[in-house]
Image (cartoon, rainbow, N blue to C red; front, side):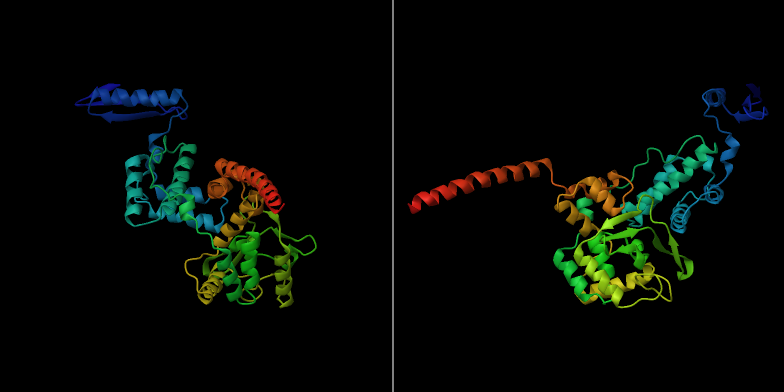
Length: 363
């Protein structure tokens, strides 16, 4: 470290190229601190070339995204997060937690839902962490940033009643009725139900095979792809759904798809959305989403006493923790089980006693 006029220059050797790296400071203490940090990072294997962070957040994302094996949906979601970031044109090395906090505050001010903010935040975080792995930056500026509190699952979740589902089935067009039933009585996601082929329904074994999903491409094209990771499954179905699907097949269909979109393709989200809104209106219901039928199905399994793993497999969740995080409030608590067990015992005892009392009274 040397003094040059009114400034101090700190220098060290680039650990990979051996070239000299230097920086100038007004105060000696600042130069010493910088040099100490750089040498400590080199010794600890955490060193990052300060010049690497001069690339902007958006430019790094463009390069990073080109190397990823993403679905169209994932790419769109990631791109949206990057475009919406208030620091998108800043150099990566200059982005601090305060910049990320400002972005979160801006999204909150725009009245975005807490879940939407979290999704965008997590997507941006994945870009920063990729930059850390590439040794473009030394730390993740999203670390420690607090997000708006999300609503509790039991408060945010809307579960249709059996009366609601009955009204929807009654109101649905005859070619859409089986689609509603598949979502309500087998728990399929919209894209999974839309991608069903006639051969996916095993009428003898009474099960549906889920092996693909429909997504909508730009321009309205239909994209057929594998379902979410861990979602391929065979779902046991009740006799009533078997009968409804058999009746649906008898209506006739073109090609291999169980549900028809335009031409010889299955329906995509926009088409199903139109059918669903019409069905809601005809049923006189408001605010019910098609995805709520999946919650209806899950709640029915839980009410019938199915365990976590059974529900996880039926819904196609990749991890049991996903099922618990979403539906834990629907399972009976230990207190509920204790109360029910005690009620059963009391019923047996008091029922027997009541019978004896009646017998004595009649004698």
